[in-house]
Image (cartoon, rainbow, N blue to C red; front, side, top):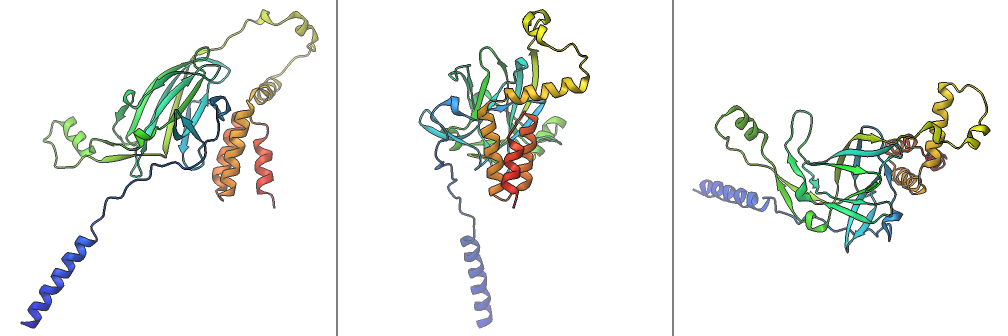
Length: 291
């Protein structure tokens, strides 16, 4: 009899322990205590939108700004000098860690907000064989009207979550099968995340060959310029035209990565800076890592 009571006691204890070990829902951290980087949008570090695709991480190293009394980590982008109109497709990837619920602000040449694209303007794109689920939107930027773009996430977004369709349910719907007994995942909105920008120039800047002043033409040496010299001149011109804010942005990212001991990330930012035409990123990196 004592053995029977002992067994029952063990089962009851295990049951109670199981209840005690049941995961308790924790309050997610959406607060941002980091000080704002700037007091004006013109002081932002602008990332040139170059190439066909850009992958941007919003993390603890990302700058913080105050948007109408609401602080948020952000990423700021500028159209390249060679493009008049550009189509941008933006994806904010969803993972088990959450998703950066974005809001987009387009600014004019004087860094004044012109247009806001809210979360309601994004669609929820389900995952496939190659991509995670994401928030997605597509827009067109115009150099004359809105050459600058800022992506951030207001606190009201960070409090929320999004329910995405379970892959098995989508598959069943595509095949006309009965809906499976699965629960659609809930992805929490977060203050960090990953963005992907796909860039497609729609109109390039053009100029007339005869618009160059004759005096400037007369000063040019009458020598044949080969392709290598042309490319070199283009790289030099690109470096000269890079804004000081962008130089500071890349140097800051490199310094943050080196101080955190993440040399591979620092090298990634160095390569990105060099592609964008930075003149100081390489020396900054060397000075930071040399013994």
